[in-house]
Length: 263
Figure 1 (tube, helix red, strand yellow):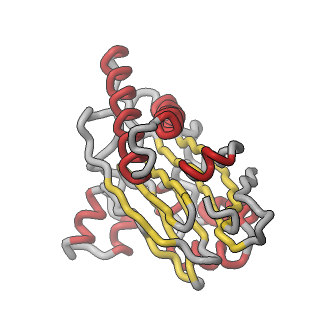
Figure 2 (cartoon, helix red, strand yellow):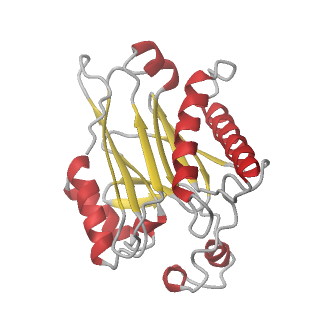
């Protein structure tokens, strides 16, 4: 990894105001080993266990740890980060599916993951947990939601504003743990100095508009941003669990390395 790239990461999850259990989980890994950091980059993951399915919190925890394990263990796709990330999520999905079958329970979760390597960010997602890039004061959604309302928005049948309050807004079309052959979307972005990445569950994106997300991230450092984002989602009702990982990219001097600052 280019030693001039500095990544400051902060993360937090919150139960919200309406739920008694937090089924979200997150993981932010910046390898301490310089070789692993250079070759494999930093890994960020958010998973949202599906409400109504048995043990959603177990499913999301299992997936983030399995993706971490498989991604850093994969040597066959060392030069193809995007495919390696996709493979890690696919393997995590198979593990979760097998466990669900063994236990006789439905176990499902969304997953959005990002690898930052050099000046590239590689994203993968299943479900409606999102990744954004905040640049020049604007938040741009990188991933595409796999949800019923998102499909209706894409074909022009409802607006984004209508999707936020639609009674079918929680209907997910893809998730991990339900089908061993689930489709995983991939996206690649060239990073710029000053970019901020946000990975979040729909407890944040469904409550706080993109413009407000961008305003908060632009105004605060990552550690404060995650607090402010969760406060805002709760102020808007906190209808679901709320999870956010904020990672800011900046140019450093030759002695700077990527760093992981957590809350």
